[in-house]
View: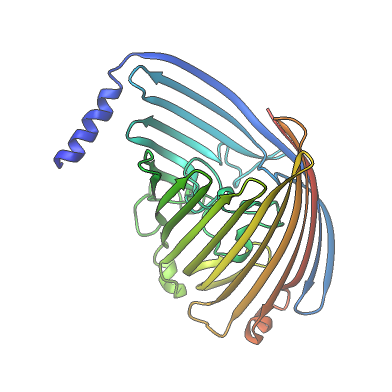
Length: 372
């Protein structure tokens, strides 16, 4: 063990030798219930219309427990357990996990925020390590099927199991984030097989700069797919390069986010483009928040260009436009509504392979959110 690492371990261990002087446990949650109308026209010419009750369109419905103990040297040790809810049915979210959104032990001190457990992915919009969600889009990763940058970018992880993460303190406006999972999904690959080549593993890092009303962040995510299944499908390990920022101009807040990626299994959440041998491409999304009449008008525009990693004759080009309105009624309760238009164009080879692919999508949502 080198001297720097030894010093860090000793300093962290010394934190627990201090006297604990404050502790507390918090029960909290969010209930978000709404309606979603969707009209879809496929490349084959068929049309469908649907009206659904949907949970967690604006903010994911959840129930959580958080407990912390603070020591007199400034160190905090805590646990956060958070489970997703489908409040239209009462079912647990995240494939039926009890605490599918967060199951994390953490230490927060002068060296940063250290966590271990299940948590939101760095290239995502959930949890304390997310660097490419709501901070880069007025619709975060999406209000249901409306807006958000996931319609024009790769579909990676929302949450990861068996993860370690660290977020540094800020220095001269900069902070860094590192995250590693040696077994991303216990439901899919089983327990007790972490770090083996037969499970998917993920590692990611980001560097962020903040100066008054300006923020910029860049990051890389790498996925080692499970073997031998990936090799049998011709799928190589995935990588994405992400860059985005925001600017608070006073009368409005502006957002921009771009991503270039290779070998992800899928892209574009609503009109999903997926190939077993992988997808390459790039996407860009811009948006704005404008305070109006006690609420916020939101607007976004995005474009994505995708092709098969091996089957380059199979392509999709997609763009979306979204507008919405968020009306806070109090600190805990908000009304929201939004609408989206998506237009996706496919190569002849892709249309022949998937005649049910969505060509044009119109989505309108509305709902009520309450925090407790």
